[in-house]
Image (cartoon, rainbow, N blue to C red; front, side, top):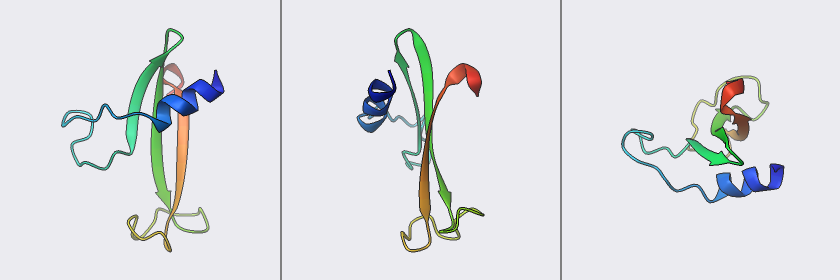
Length: 73
């Protein structure tokens, strides 16, 4: 199931104005095996201590992907 959840996250393209109002494509949800999953991308500084000062600059940003069961949120 983990591999399927990663695959669903990687191929997610159901972004709309309602679920992605800023066009950042950094959150989504999907159904798998009768369960709802959420995924999100957070933007940290290179040391993973604070939020990135400039998420668009890869030299100042470490991106972290989290995939979770919706009922654990």
